[in-house]
Amino acid sequence: MSIKLIACDLDNTLTENSFILPKVKEFLQGIVNEGIKFVINSGRCLKNIRDVLLESKIYPSLGFPQAIISRHGVNIHYLKDEDYIADEEWNRKKEEQLKLMQGNVGWKGIKWEKLIKKMGLSPQEKRISYGLFALRFDREKEARLARSILTQKNHIKYVTFLRNKGYLTLSLSTALKGKSLVKVAQYFNIPSSRVLAIGDSQNDEDMLDGKFGFLSAVPSNAEEEIKEMVDKNGGYIALHPAGKGTVEAINSLLLKNQG
Image 1 (tube, one colour):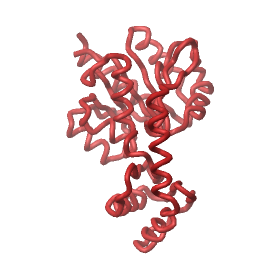
Image 2 (cartoon, helix red, strand yellow):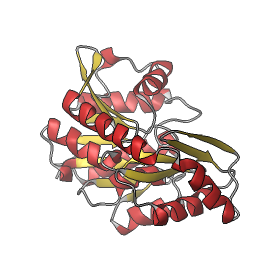
Image 3 (tube, one colour):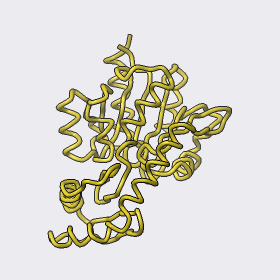
């Protein structure tokens, strides 16, 4: 069964040194010209994603990406008439839930920080305020352990913790990359079995773990636990990192699933 939609994480999956290489851009233009939908699915906000695209000389006039999922699934925008237009129903609902989550969290971030410090974990940077909680650790291992501790202790509605390398952040559990990608696939009337998702870190897990029926792939620089998960689900592990690995994976899976 042929692939009709490809959704790709941005940082360290599509980009190298914070921009998309010209050869990767040309490849993406080629698959879009063949009728495949291409979607960026990132934890960044829409403005930051568009800035990366502009710096990489990927303009809306080129016709892709046809959709941008931002803030770990909280916002969806579709390319229409060379601009990105909000999915008003989805975005409104998720923003409402996000406000409820932030109210439920309140100042609990202070308590969470104390909890992980008791376990001997000390973040190098932190952003903690009302309804906001984000930490950066020097070592990925520490961020992984902190996430495990907080996930076990969490009983707050709408709350989940996501990790990208050494970064740990609070996020909306009803959004995430997989759930939002289901919505985008439905918008384009494409079944999940014809969707390929590509990512590299724990915050991509929701679209890579197989529960929504997507095909999956990772570049060679992906976290080991994500590689193991994708491999277990029959996904593709690229030999090359970042953008080159993403191109490799798409090429291989397009050939395998053509027809």
